[in-house]
Amino acid sequence: MKDTEGYVTADGRQIGGTLMEMRNITLRFGGVVAIQDISFDIREGEVRAIIGPNGAGKSSMLNVISGFYTPSEGEVWYKGSKRPPMKPFEVARQGVARTFQNIALFEGMTVLDNVMTGRLTHMNAGITSQALWWGKARDEEMENREKVERVIDFLEIQNIRKTPVGRLPYGLKKRVELARALAAEPSLLLLDEPMAGMNVEEKEDMSRFILDVNDEFGTTICLIEHDMGVVMDLSDRVVVMDYGKKIGDGTPDEVRNNQDVIDAYLGVPH
Amino acid sequence: MLNDIFIAPFADMISAPDFLMQVLWEGLVSGILYALIALGFVLIFRSSRIFNFAQGIMVVFAALTLVGLFAMGIPAWISVGLTLGVMFVLAVAIERVVLRPLVGQPDIILFMATIGITLFLIGFGETIFGGENKVMITEELGIPTGDTVLEPFNGLLILQHLDITVVVVATLLVLGLLAFLNYTQMGRAIRALGDDHQAALSVGISLQTIWVLVWFIAGIIALVTGIAWGARAGVSFALEVIAYKALPVLMLGGLESITGAIVGGLMIGILEKLFEIYWGQPLLGGNTETWFAFVLALVVLLFRPQGLFGERIIERV
Image 1 (spheres, each protein chain N blue to C red):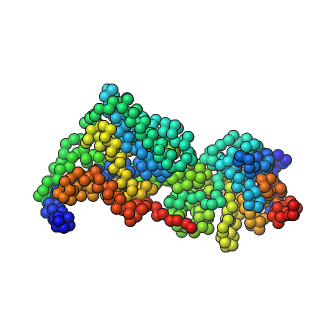
Image 2: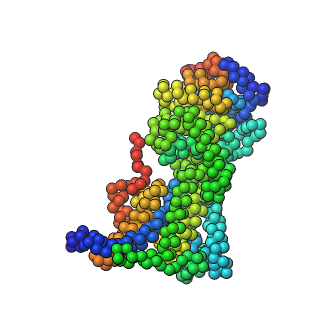
Image 3: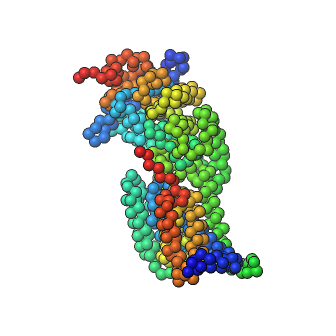
């Protein structure tokens, strides 16, 4: 990779070295090529966006990063070493947390319990200890509760802690999902269309939370979004995809002036 | 006729309160066992959407293994430990050989697979331990066999020590399971897995680990039920039937609900006993316990298809 020194953003934040790097990723489903030879990197501490029209392969890319899909070709490098093919739960245990486009929460459980599951990646106590509620398991549970309460405070969902998730409105569910991902204290936080289906006010809230998370916890964030306005405001660097190919990569300004990107979004006569 | 149905039974209950207490107590004893078994079903269903047809045969298999090991000259309590080991190996084997290759298949396929497990365990158990009836090693396990006679309302109430032990042990096990599910990370993972597989994977839950865990818990439950029921009725393949008694419990309680399994189990245990003594024997010639629970479940299902405690079915259009 070119330079691993990092860079300073327009608003003066120092961005670190490479955290994750996708090298020549190709993903095929039978004859369909969802992703074609795409490379890009994610630096520590930045907000990285992947944008593109519907069907561009953004979600597929996120699923490759989070281990839900295994790329047909190409390599994923994470924290300086090549990642072998892994199951999603193993990727999660390496510090990659994610949210889903269509919200995947545990509907029957309370908000608090949902967020607590985010701490599962930090669970070390054995089954016996857990079954007897003794020693390590108990200490861990206390510690987990503390961290979870912090996240809950941070995302301003204290008042619904004990509510079963199934009863919450859409916007709040999205926020609970974010809370669950954050509770894992991830090195890399993947957000799959965090604003999809939200009204303006909810979008503003969500944008604020995303920036705050990045600011306060220093979490590296990679997000997918097709609302261009939102993306440009939020992110430090943007990858643009169209028909499974990368057509642009750079700061929001660079991308906005890229002719290929404009064509992809506005359409060009063929 | 109306008198026999609506008035006489209640008059009997009031005139002989000690006998009523005896009936309730016996209902409670079987009820708590039903609840325990239903809990085994619910755990497996919640974490993998599998209706575990093999729960019944697991009861038999656990009891047979325990008795078999003891017959080989191994001390009783060590046999219990070894049987738990066998149930754990069984859980690992089922996950490895049956569940893992079938991941993502329709629910009905997995259900069929558990029928396969049932048939296998029947054959395997008979090959190793033989098909003849055996006696549960109640005394050797230190389970008291006497009885305590109380005299409430100047009447007579006989509490078998065996029954008291069963109630205490089963209650502890149920409470322990509830605490485990609600207050530990592992328990949360089990509940989470039942709600959403994708989400569970994304927070680092391993399907395999949890499956082995719930099948092992089902195995522990099977062993406890096997000991308790075996002590009353002997150890034979007929023990399997007790698991089918859990079916109406599940219909009542809903397959999803842990509370439902417990309340449903107690309810069926007590109601079927009451019905048998006060209505069944005088009016229908007895032996109503075999079908009462199913009819009750059927009636409940007519009005609440999701069961008494099941999650409400909401169709989003």
